[in-house]
Amino acid sequence: MMRDYGFVSYASRDDFFDRSRAAWNPGKTQFWLDQGVDLVIDRREGYHLWDVDGRKLIDVHLNGGTYSLGHRHPELVAAMNEAMTHYDVGNHHFPSIARTALAERLLATCDGTMGKVVFAAGGGEAIDIALKTARHATQRRKIVSIRNAFHGHTGLAVNAGNPRFSRLFLVDEPSQFPQVDFNDLAAMESALRGGDVAAVLLETVPATYGFVMPEPGYLAGVKDLCERYGTVYIADEVQTGLMRTGEMWGIYKAGVSPDILVTSKGTAGGLYPLGAVIVADKVAGWLDEDGFGHISTFGGAELGCIVAMKVLEITGRPQTRATVASIAARLERGLADIRSDHPDFFVGIRQNGLVIGLEFDHPTGAQLVMRALYENGVWAIFSTLDTRVLQFKPGLLMSPELVDDLLERLHRAVGQARAAARATSGRAA
Image (cartoon, rainbow, N blue to C red):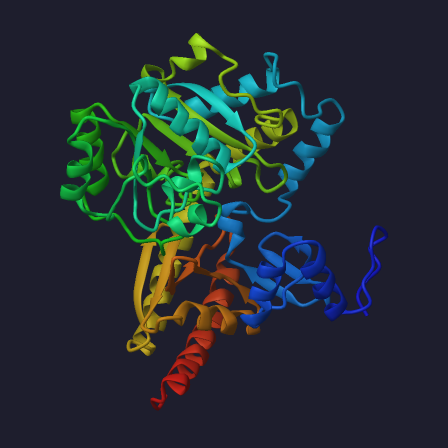
C-alpha cells in the first residue's frame, strides 16, 4: 500500500501509474516504466532521494543541475523560510529591492562587460528573452545554434534545439533558425558570413547532446566570428553555470566574454523557479526604449531572488571551489579505473569539472547503464539526443565518502550493463 499524503492517497504503485497516465502525462509515465525505472520520488535531502517505498538513491541527475547544492540545502531552506515572513512573489511592474539586489550580485559574478539583468520564471523563457534582446540589438532575425542542441521548449527557444520538439507542434522555422555542427568553425563562419544573423546561441558544453566538449579554441573562435559579423554571442549556462565546471560560469573558464549569459535551473537551489538573463549594456537597449517589452508575472519572484542570493553566496565561497576541484579530481581517477576494467564497453569520459558525460560502445548503452545504476541505488539519466552517453552530474558539495560510494556503485553497474549489452547483441560477455 502506498501512503496517504493527506491531499491524495493511492492504493498501490499500479494505481498511481494508472492515474498518472490518465491525468498527467501518459507518454512520459509509460516511457520510464518501459525503461525499467519505476521511480516515484518521495523524500529528498542532500544528494539522496527516497522513493515511496523508502528505497534510497544517490542523485547524480540533479535535474540538470537544479540541485547542485543538494536537495533542500539547510541554508537555502532557512533563507526561504525567513523570506516568507516578509515577501511573496512581488509585483513585476515595480522596482523591487530583492530583484535589484540579486541583479547586482549576478553582475558582480561577471567580467565587467555586463550591465543589466532581466529575470524569467525558468530557462526556456530566459532563452526567449535572450533571443529577443539580440534581435532588437541587431535588427536581424536569424538565430544560429548547433545541431542536436537543447535550449528549452518555449516559443523561440524550442526552434534553436533539435527539430523533434518544434515539429511536433508545427512551430519549426528552419529558415530563421539555421543549425551547424558543433566544433566546426568553418560551418559557423559560413552561417554568419551573410551578415544577417542576430545571435549565435551555444551551451558552453551541450548537455542533452551528451556533454560533447568544445575543442580548444572553438568557443573563442565563435566569439571572434560574432565580433567580425556583428552577431550577438549568447552563452547558455543553464547547465554549466554556478560552479559546475569549477568556475562560476563555464564560458569564462573558456576565456570567452559573451554578450548575453543565461542561467536557470540551480539559480534558486531547487526551491523556487527562477531564470536570469545577464546582458551587456551594448545590447540592452530595449530596456531603455520600452521596459515593458517583456513582461513576466513570476520572473524574478522575490522569494526566489532571496534564495538565489544565498545560492550565489554558497557557490562563490572559496571552500566550495576547493571542494569542486577535489571531487572532480577524485572522479577523474575513479572513472579512469572503471573504464580500464571495461575498455570495450566504457569507451569515453567527457569531463569539465563536474560536467561529465560517460560514453558507451552500444547504441543504447547509456540507457542500459542508467537502469543498472537504478538497480544499484543511483539515479542518473541518459542523454536524450545521444543514448550512448550517460549524463553524470555529481553535486558540488559531495563528501569524499559519498563520491567513493558512488564510484563503487557505478563500477558494478557498468559491469552489469556490459553483460546485458553483450547478451542482447549475441556476443559473449
